[in-house]
Image 1 (tube, rainbow, N blue to C red):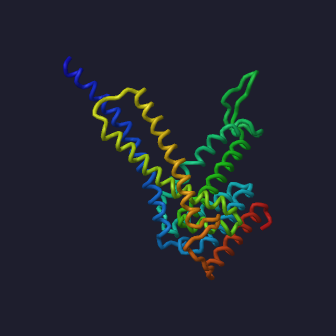
Image 2 (cartoon, helix red, strand yellow):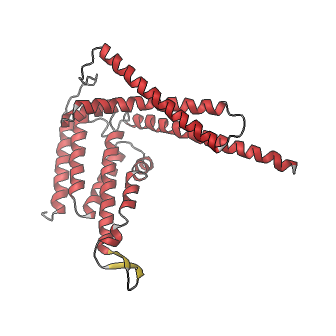
Image 3 (cartoon, rainbow, N blue to C red):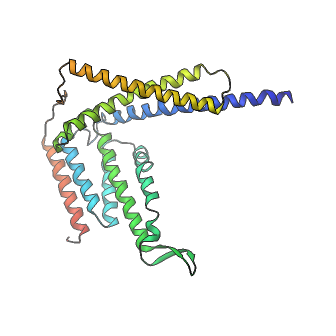
Length: 291
């Protein structure tokens, strides 16, 4: 009986330590993924050597092709081209696929489930068949859901390919080619930069909590600590935003975006833009049955 009494408190302590350890691991993993993704942009791949402006324009053209295509085969062919570009850019296949399909496309698949039953067509699988209601998966519903999921997955793959093969600062400067408002680009750049800082700060707070936990804690206490930590982190972020803005003004910031990167469009960069335009036009013509 005594051994049972001794084991249970230790089990609760392990559960508490597991909660904090998982939180620390999650924050640290987020930092590692971001740093690892930045390293991909320095690899000697096909797209890494191209001008960011050429990549942005080519990606936009292919995104338009994916958005306007109405046949699943066309979108699948475009996705195969994206996978080929990822391979030529030295991106790990499993990393790239998981990075894409474990996010937005999976959510899109959940959103597409009602289309299986609501789009009229020939029934393929009857789930409920009664005098009051009939629920069945139709061929048109299945085709619509597959087209939607493939279109979202291909579009996200194109965006992820652009981000993984381009350094963030260069990508933000390249967005100005599309006349994206400079204020939006500046806010996006600062958000990306200081997100790492606050993730590091949150990681330190979790580590401090873990190092000071010597016994089991209740669920209520853990919730209070989590709420207090979130409030403290929010307060620090608000104060830092004001301090950073004042420091920028003191150093002559007047809303102009300035970077050290200097872009030069070479023959290979123009070739990438022409290839993106030709590929997008060819896919859309094939989709419309004009070729």
